[in-house]
Amino acid sequence: MTTKEEVKVLWQQCFDDSDAFVDLYFEHRYTDERNVAIKRNGKIVSALQLSPYQMKYCDKTIPVSYISGACTHPGYRKQGLMSSLLADAHRRMYTEGAWMGMLIPASNELYEYYAKSGYAPVFYNDIQKVDTRFVHLSPLYTITDELEDDSCLWEHYHYLSTCMEKRSCGVLHSREDFQVIMDDLRLDRSRLLVARRGGLIHGMAFCMKTGERLLVKELLADNQAISDSLLKKASMLWRIDEVDCLTPSLQDMHRLGMARIINAENMLKLFARKYPEKKMFLQLKDEVIPENNGYYLIDKGNCLHGHCPDKVCQVWHVNELTSLLLKSEHPYMSLMLN
Image 1 (cartoon, rainbow, N blue to C red):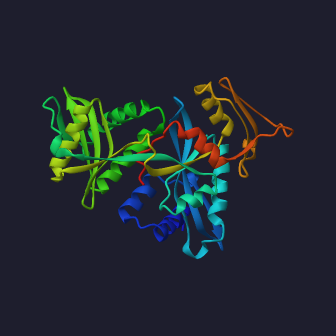
Image 2 (cartoon, one colour; image 1 turned 120 degrees about the vertical axis):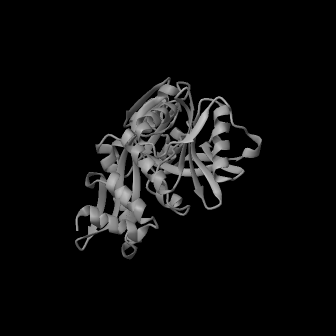
Image 3 (cartoon, rainbow, N blue to C red; image 1 turned 120 degrees about the horizontal axis):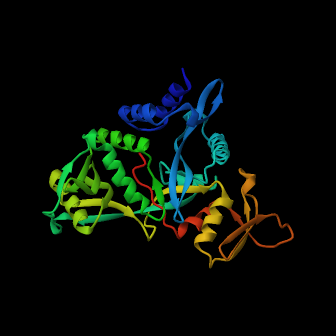
C-alpha cells in the first residue's frame, strides 16, 4: 500500500467518520508532504497531518499550522507514540515557519492529554439559542440556498474572507480550503443561505441539521436585520422554531480548540507591540523547540530575548505562555471540518 492508503486505513480504524467524508478528506486535504507518521514493523501505526493556515493575531496575519487526523492504532496505544509524533510535528512546524499550532481534541478527555505537549484551550465559542418566532424576514433582501451553485463559489468565498478579516483574532480560510468546506457541507445535506440585495451578498449562514437541532455553524451579516432574516429563513426551511447559532465568545463559554506557541519570540513581539503598557520578565522552557528557551523582557512595546542565568524570574511553560498571549484576544475558529 502507498503511504496515503496506509494512513487512510489507520484513520478508518480510529475514527467513526462516514466513508464519504474520509474519501473527501483524502482526496482534497491529505498529501504525503503534510503527513507525519511513525512506523513499527514496516507499517504506519501513528499519524497526523499538518495543514497550513493564516490567522489574525494582534491585528496582524500570521502563519499557523492545524493538526488533523491525529491517531494511533489501538494495538500500539499507551506507548508514547503520539507524544513523540507531536514533538516531531512541532519541530517541523518551527522549521516551516509556523508561529503557532492548533488542534481540536476529539473528546473532552484529550484536553488534558494535549496540555502535556504544550497546548492550552484558547478557542471558545458561544451557542446562541434564537427563538425565530420573534424575528422577522426583511423585505429588503432575498434569501436563497446557494450551496449547489458553483458559479457563485468565489463570490461566496470573497464575502466570507472579507468578514473574517474584520475579526481581530481568528483563523482564516484559503480558497482551496473553502472548496473543501463546501464539499463537506454537501455531504451533510446542509444549506448555505445567502442574503442578497441588488444582486450583492449582504449575509450568509452555514446551516445544518444535527439530530433534532438546527445548527448555524457560521453566521455572517452586514447588520442585525440580515442576521434575523437568515435565521428566520433557516427555521422556515426546516420547520423548527429554535436555532442554535455558533458565535465568537468573549466569555470563554464553550471549549472549541487548543493552541501551542511554536515561535515564542515572534508571538511575544506582536503581543508587546499591541500592549505597550505591559511589562514582563519571564523565562520560557520548551523541551521540544529549544530555540524558544531563554529569558524575555517585555517593556514599552518591545520584546528582548536573551540568556540571563543570573536573573531570577518566573519560569513559564509553553501552555502557560500560550494561554497568556491568546486570552485577551479571544481567538475564534469555525468551519474546520471537525
